[in-house]
Image 1 (cartoon, rainbow, N blue to C red):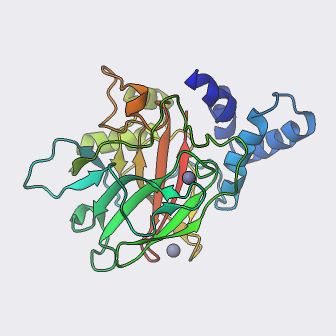
Image 2 (cartoon, rainbow, N blue to C red; image 1 turned 90 degrees about the vertical axis):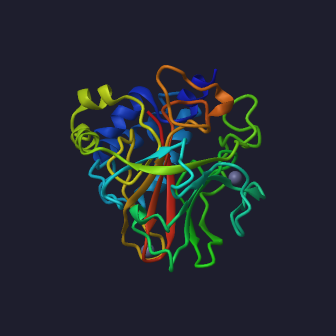
Length: 292
Ligand SMILES: [Zn+2]
Ligand SMILES: [Zn+2]
């Protein structure tokens, strides 16, 4: 049922691979869809709305050459030792200004990263925390969502995609969705050199990508993203490096052996990733989602 919703309303399966083959082909496909309406009703506006806004941000649509900061990847450790720097994952959002202007409720706080952690490569004097924020009950997943983090660690929303007819709405992406997930504190663990090299190699090697399977939550590095986009900062217009990718599991890391129940996930679709880019100069986060 959930999968059917995604197939109908999202970008997945064969259609996604058509998109991956390049911007020119996408534009041709887009024209053909607009002219002929051959794929039915809702998938067309949903798909185009998801991707057309992205064209404003990208000169190399579907270019998989990701440029990341931090350059070396970190995984989230959900069993952090008391001596480690800990970062709250999910839980309540009490961050000033971090309210969804469409839903009129606090945004989903995915992660607040304390920049005292030197691995993040962010000046704690300028930006004491990087908040990863999102919303699944309005138009936010259907375009690029951006916000600035002020020195006081409060948030100023910059861009919310326009209202979207096929958004999930207050009921969320699956039956029983609450948008509330328990807080877990995580620490950052660097990927091994071998893991990092395999991820980099898998960017251009589909078989290796398949072997690596579902990606974990990751800060920096070169996580595999099904539908990557290059993003520019809405304030300075410079390319904004990839900062973090959050997988669909809302209570831990993905596990192939023990898949989480839908209510322990953000969307009920294991292929969903929330992708966050960060312009350090402007302290601006830009986010979009990808699915397979
Ligand atoms: Zn919202
Ligand atoms: Zn900027």
